[in-house]
Length: 427
Image (cartoon, rainbow, N blue to C red; front, side):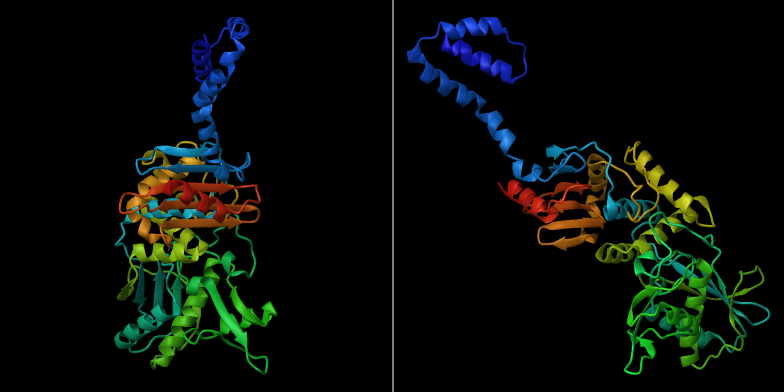
């Protein structure tokens, strides 16, 4: 009879219906001498359930009802999870989806370009197409080429019409913080300037390769800081002006002096193409740098450029978001996510841990672009009160495991949770 009871325990463990009256009558007829055996049998049958409940406990202790976690094997089979369907704020892990859409539409070998024209009045015109890595060293190389192809020029005209002028990114404020840099079709140094003050209090460059131009000096005097990295542009036109002044500085070093001023304009059909700069950085290098520095400016430059590439110029945030949303729906089969920009800076972005798992599975061939820490390839994200991390755990020489950790409310240590994940996978 006690074996019959054990079977009932097993049935109830499998959530089948049990006749409780029959069970009660059965218990009354069991001799006292059989109870020890009975208890041993019951414990033995319940042990797998107890083990399963305890197995992920160190992972789940820090996961609140507002958080989410998913760990899956190399085939996408979930090993353990919590709140996996809850829509959370992904923060900067969203950059993985942006990168995936860019690779899909442009290819890893794609290179941004910038064009240089001379019009009939001998003005030099610069037309930008959203290159996020027009840094000082690049502008120096461009100036070297232009100096060899130009005799002289009058004004420098900057054409930033490939993007609309005013692009408001949700989550980005109108501040001088470097992470609030605006986007534009023609930019330099991520629309930031790094400066310091010398012993006399004079504003000087903090980077030898980047001069203080008249525009930046005018802006820095209003900052009132002793130094640091700041964004000084509040619109695409200001960003283009800064890029133009930087180019003029390097042209002057090579004996080419502008006779006039820097002003916004457009390239006309009759203008003569002098030089097309193709970025020295392929898209995969741009993405790798974006992940390394978690650069929001770069992510949204790529997003807006994608919008112009797929739906035609001018590039807008709405077009870029549509590209990202369409890709998620049509390629990843994600129909219930909310995307408002491409960097993760906005709290209005929403997707679940399962959604991010789908992104990771598709991105897996490109995982080497992410930041690496030993056996882990990952992208982390941080907003006030929010910590996220998603990526891959390379166990041996085989295919990696996937993990997604979205902490949207708890004060748990996300690195400790990840360490626990790795220990469980090793075991």
